[in-house]
Image (tube, rainbow, N blue to C red):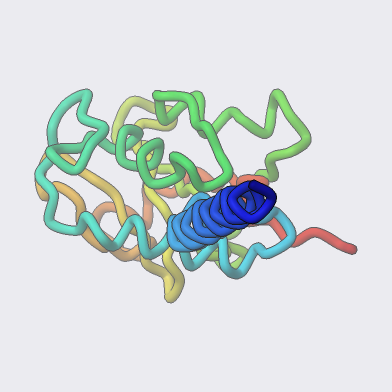
Length: 177
């Protein structure tokens, strides 16, 4: 009888070990499982990769999925599960540093870092558009005229003169140890 009890215990142990290994593999393979606030470089790469993965997605007013995005739906989706829960409107995303010192305002384009939310005035006299900075003076956003695309922050005809500022999120900030 003791032999069969030992066999059952060993079987349970091996089964539990297997479940633990599978769970840890799944968590390590998913973007959310790979995130830690002290690893800002990895966070930035994840955000950029997620944003780039939907280039070409059409614009859809109120859209917040790969079936179609508006600008703030795109940024909300890109950061979902990646260290930030963003408000749904671009103005609210811009105002995050007003209400919490977890967020940082960036005024100069030369100080941007990958993953920063970038904002533009699209004609209303206030923030009307948001995108995600991906480096090299470029950002990704969704517009009614082109869907999700990479654009230049310095475009002299449209985006350049409409620059407002940026918001750096906790998930992509450098933290001192």
